[in-house]
Length: 339
Image (tube, rainbow, N blue to C red):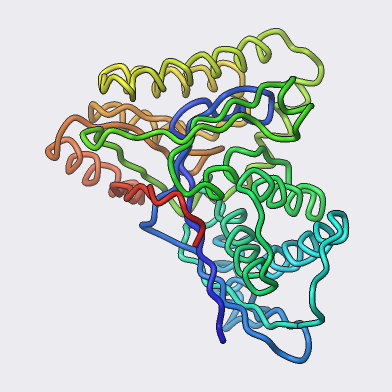
């Protein structure tokens, strides 16, 4: 029997990048793209490469294009990290697992390395399949922590919990990473929330800006740990923006949502200007000139914002297309169930 696990890209609506600094965020996943992991029993454990893991290329041009799109590392390392963290989790929690082996493979059409949490989606889908294979259950909170540990501890990828929480819950979530609660329980305070259906959201991305989130997080972490006042103030303001966003979503005040989104990005520019490329900044500026609000969905390469009507959306799509930027309307996942 083939077991299939799914996971979806994440878009941070507000508050990022404060999730790694005891802040607050709101994020959701959307199913315009997906990761599919398939797992089936075999005599030995086998990790099957996908197109992102090829080591054979047609020529140097093909090699250059593949590395530009996917980097030097594919998804096999993510599958291995997921499997090892699962094994460690079972040992640490005294869970007995049968001596069964498996072959595992993945497919992903999530735009790569563009701030849409494509890497954590692969680990999330893999762990869902592995947990199902061994018939072990886990809470959403523990699951999100396990995905983060696979990336951070096994692969040394600097990241926060936000992406993994959204992907674990599979519904929009208000996340409060209160320091006291985090230190006591190991996870934040997570509250599923509703995104109003009349809130016009778009996501835009460009494939020529592939850059891992570690660049932004490494620089910000240094300043945060050093207690740089403007960084501490920024984290506190991102948290405040998130609380105000929650109130705006609850009341359906779409105009306030747009202003909060814009402020989130402007604040990032004030404290992280050196880590924002000119092309990334221009993408936001172009969207705003069309009348839309705009901020990064993650750490760059993709943006999220609001638009007023279908006419503005078409203007966004037409204008950004000239700069090799794709614009979509995200289909927000609200099932609240892991697949």
